[in-house]
Image (cartoon, rainbow, N blue to C red; front, top):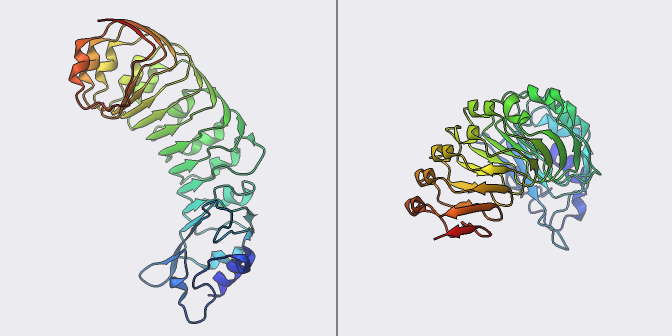
Length: 322
């Protein structure tokens, strides 16, 4: 109760409009709003999301206090969309940390080596280079750094994170070779780098990636052809290469993408015809888009085999003979 009282006053608790149970001597701490406890009545999770309305019910301001380290069973701290300024010291027991829209990326985070999941989305900074210190967090499996205005390239030290499975770098200004995250993070399952400035053709070595489930490179500067290697990744289910600079014709190896449910190749410079092997992609159920390219020729009848394809699919902006 003492620790949570310190938390309350450190983050402007007296001005929270809705703080059900907080500091009420007749209410157990485990019944305070946004607090969850384990079976032993130890605080295990503290989660609060500011919905962003004009008069938020619980708007946390200030610095996360060091007293939280006394809660050895507290593993999840998720404080989304609050104007929090930082933290007093590293929180050594936390495994899952989410601090969306915090005023800055706290340097203390880089000392929290037990972290498994880290979400720092849309921090109120003016951008800056990719934090090299993230390479210290060797236990990270999930990392979200979207919409932070990050610039430059991904530092080599970052690729020490061999356990990383989910990486979201969407909506930054990052540059560099598009292949590096996949070649250096062999356990990645989900890679999202939408709306950055990654370049280069996709290399054949990518096909050796054994775990990749989803690859989203929308809105970068990836060039070259649509590589055979992409369709040789047997685990791949989602592929979005839209709004890049891809050219050349589609390879017949597209027929190897038998697990892909979502395929978006729109807004590139792809030409030639659609391979008949497209009919082998029977797992396509949500989207297949090739619109705004230079694809022509006759539509293959094999498209009729894709009976489960959703209505959001499109071949608009092409010229076909029927």
